[in-house]
Image 1 (cartoon, rainbow, N blue to C red):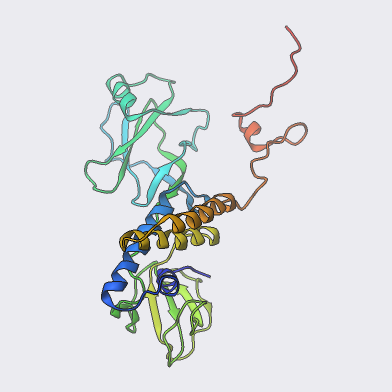
Image 2 (tube, rainbow, N blue to C red):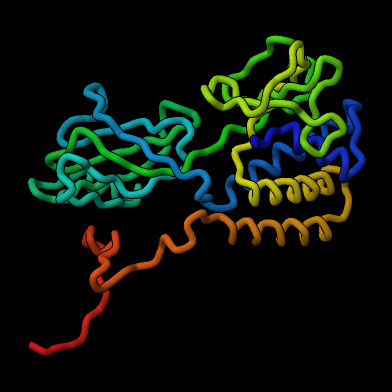
Amino acid sequence: MYYAAQDIIEYLMASVGGGAQDSEHAVLRSAAHNAYRDVMNVRDWNWHIAEATLADDPNAGSGNGVETFTLPANVKNIDALVPPQDVSTPTVYVTPTDWYRVDIKIPTLNSPVYWTIIKDPSAPDRWLLKLAGTPVPTTYKYTYRRRPMPLRYMGYEPQCRQPGFSVNGAVKRYGTAEQFPDGLSGMNPYTAQEIIGMNGSLIGTPPNNAKTVVSDYVDASDSMFSAILSCTEVWVAKLTGKNVEGAMTVYGRDLRLAFEADNVAPISGTRNGGMFIGTARALGYYSPSGPDTGV
């Protein structure tokens, strides 16, 4: 199933007694938006790990062995760069402060490729990656944490319930010919849902002439979603001037459970030795200590 912003609003209307009136709905929308941002940024979730290729742009760079790349808009942070053409060339991250020292004196031949990330001065919400070294490979592989888009359409706006309304990446739910669809916990659960613009994402069979609701996709796993719901109650209490201690206790519990569940391969970090050489040792960046045999 796909989680959607509609699920968050339905939960709040059930838990704190919100209604469809504009004044109450504004509080619920604000709580959903702020809670989603908080949980998405509280840690680097494994759910948000992605990979990409940093292709060389002949128009980028300042010359003299320095290259610059504007990272995609959804990049939150990235891991070490790996040049596929020559994995023997080390890449070394330096802080932006140290980068200015590297930029003044460009590394010589056979030195590591130094890189850093700074705010892109030409884009209000993008990061700029800078490389320095000789030679600089033409492409890099890297993994990164993606940054989910903020919630905008909650599913209760008039346009979200109009036939033909479409937003790429949002969740479209189908009800029946008589009823608009609710979430699975609602009185009229959806009969089918899909992510707009994603082929093969349709789950279920929409009835003929079914009424539809479009709301933004919540980019979260099952355990993360529980933490989001608890965090929305914290924000409702803050926005309405109520005591937040009780809601914070529940949110803290759900957040800890989400941290523990944020792993789909629990034994993936096991380092193998002996005849079963693990990935880390095979790549050369980890080797278990052996006995001291002297010189």
